[in-house]
Length: 113
Image (cartoon, rainbow, N blue to C red; front, side, top):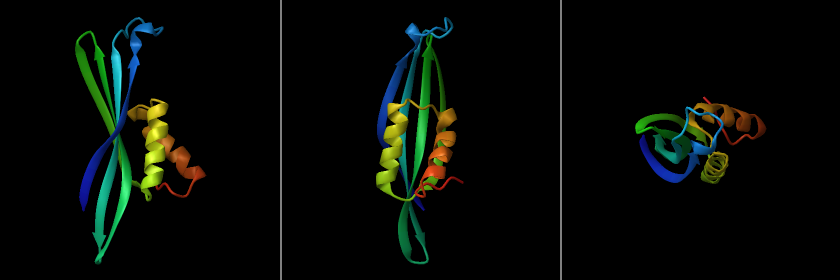
């Protein structure tokens, strides 16, 4: 199986205007489409996944977290729609699985494992 990651888009959050005085930095979110090229019994097909990376910069201290969900979407168009939804709503890695599970109960295109 071959895995390819494509950058989809990013979003940033400026924490300086937030109510929390301890957070005066910046949060950067990056969204990637994960493409799995699968070959089984001479049949080739693709499945799609999502990766979200959150990078926090606060007082020159950098922290990063990420979440990858592989092979949860069968159609590339659906993967692109999900990525756009995540990006527009600035979804962080900790919430990605919950969002995908919610979407999978409404549509048959998502497979959450």
